[in-house]
Amino acid sequence: MVCVYILETGKAGPRSLGGASKWWLHKSLETLSADIEARGGRLLLRRGDARDILPGLADELEACGVFWNRRYDAGGIAADREIKTALKEAGLEAKSFNGRLLSEPWCIQTQSGGHYKVFTPYWKALRAELSLPEARPAPDALADPDVTSEALEDWALLPAAPNWAAQFSEMWTSGEAGARERLEAFLDGPVNGYAEDRDRTDLEWSTSGLSPHLRWGEIGPAQIWRAVQARTSAGDVNESAAWKFLSELAWREFSYVLLYHNPNLASENYNSDFNHMPWRNSESDLAAWQCGQTGYPIVDAGMRQLWSLGWMHNRVRMIAASFLTKHLLIPWQNGEAWFWDTLVDADPASNAASWQWVAGSGADAAPYFRIFNPITQGQKFDMTGDYVRRWCPELIDLPDKYLFSPWEAPDDVLAEAGVRLGESYPHPIIDHSHGRQRALDAYDRVKSRREAS
Image (tube, rainbow, N blue to C red; front, side):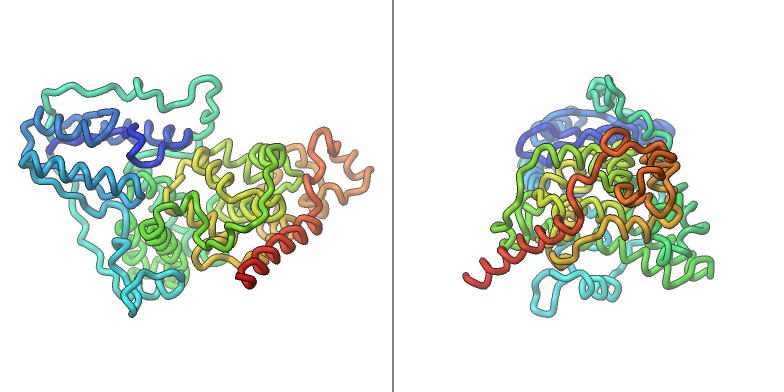
């Protein structure tokens, strides 16, 4: 068996990777290459259009078959289909497999034969119908083919000047070994508090941190599911916490169902009513949100964490997304594109589905009138204030009472804390009450348009 990775650059292929994803891919390919070399093999690297590369490489290797992990985005599906056709016409065996999901997007169906459009019944059906394959060992030996390979460094996946990913390696260890370590660390303790603590931003590890490893195939959802079930059966993991954690894996599965049946999920409203949403186009507001300069500390802390680590706590992802789409009335597609570029776990299904869920335009979406209050959300989920103080250090000496609404602090309190609103930390980009009411008014226009039609 010869192992190959193709960095697809053709326009007809999958969506182009964002900057943070390229960083992770570089690191992941480094560790994968080392793992393969430890088994006597060599990872071949190719860049370009896989539809052109694979038939030629198969001929060069005198291969009898080509096997790969199936894709579910529109570009990937189309490319896979053409690759299979070309290889089979050349007399080769060509097969793709489920390498990233618990269940294929077309397998779990409603009683009427369609796909699920609401998460809770989908989750119940998945639990009832799921049948996992047995774990299989890694191969003992792999081939070292006498063919040329491109150099990973030539792909220029890592940022150069400036190196905005300098802190990424402090948090992440890419590769299968890093994924297993992350899973074991989570199951050794934090999982038992997951149901209660997963929204706590001030705890160092209230979530698993497995999302980038899942995104890049360094660990599979079946591996995680089996490990959680084994620990639960042994009495090491609380059953209710285990199911809560596994339900998050199911949300990822549900997102792939939505993507497969709605190929334009990352660009078009799932709910077409939102085509009439009176969005605003404000480059200055978008830039303030991207840079963590909105004047709302919990939002700014999340956006700065994202830029520094290529990752953001899930609760803050929801708060930040709600703020952009509702307080600022900026289209969710702008936020989805920013996350796609800056997240190491930028997933083609989860990213789009989650943005639409928060915006109110998606399947089984949060009601549009559910508008997160960034002040009370910070107070509730950053109970100690450690999260905001870490990522907004200019507020580090501000008392807890005013930490999430600095503009409410008296002048003497601000002065004692060294906070100069409008200088060291921005004034709120919009008043919360005004932003909330403007969002509700916008939704009323969508609602009236729907009722009229």
